[in-house]
Length: 422
Image 1 (tube, rainbow, N blue to C red):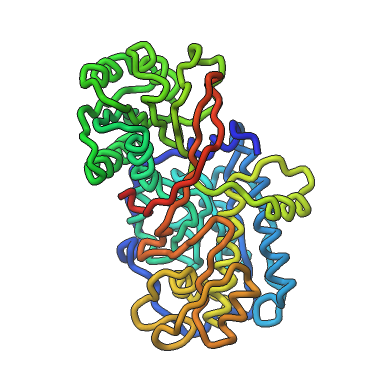
Image 2: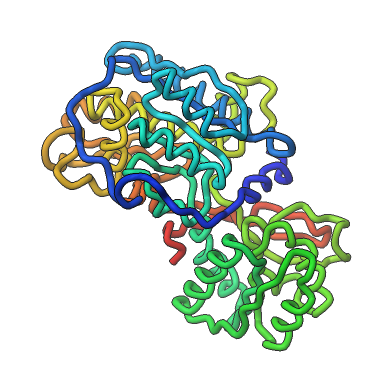
């Protein structure tokens, strides 16, 4: 996929969120008596318009692929799983209400973190499980969903330990953090500082700036004479890089957060980023997975969030199989266990107690594990899931990119970090 388009995944708004539903966000749904109608219905919330509309196609293709494979393996309790007709709108509350009316048992989405609360409030109130393949705002970990909200994407802060590691691997002993104002910048910068200290790096400066006004922050970083600078930025990234370059903090000294990684090229001074490193969340789709997605949608050009969407759908179906019930409450109660996370208190949907777990990488494989009397531990196209009590994945994969003389990034490695950013 074109890297420039993939980078839009890092532009999701990270906002301060407050929940308005039920128990704490970390509370999980307890096992419930079967209450489904026998048909597992999966809905999608596609909320990408304008410059972001290219994000819809890979999510839709991945959902269709997953449902196709689930039905080829027998569906849910012998009946085909239904993928409800999709719509595209930034009004996620309206989409959520329509999906509730269509009797959705689980909903995949939305993409934008800032729109998640509106969807969660409607769906959780209706006892419909919600799994976002793309939400990254750290505050969502504690959003009061009553235990119905999960995400197969990592929170923004998960990249912190990787950013600190890249600086240390580059020989740095001292580190400056330069971050853009706003929730994303503050949260990730704080996590980077913590991770740096844990790894033995000395944080000699932490400077904040507003997009387009990074000169003073760059001067503050320069005065601290750091071995490396971690830039945590979204909209103001290019201007901040230019100011850091003017201050003599460029090239190999720079480590860029996910939202700051882009194909800058001639938009920056010659060799401004030569040797700089940055990260993007997720894994690069395998050739086989890309082939399967293109078979579903021959016009598909991007794969952003495809792996996370596919895994969300498979996990929902495995959770329903484990519960032997398609109701949203049963799915939500089973998701932690079948993902490989710690089983919920009071047992899990696969039976009383905690049966021995066994890894599986497909819906059919996970159903076979259930038939053998064991607990499936689904590891998917996006890697290990292992939901924690917040509904977050416990391990986050990051692709590492290194910039060349042309200020363009090339993938150069992979790193895995905990979802907490430590």
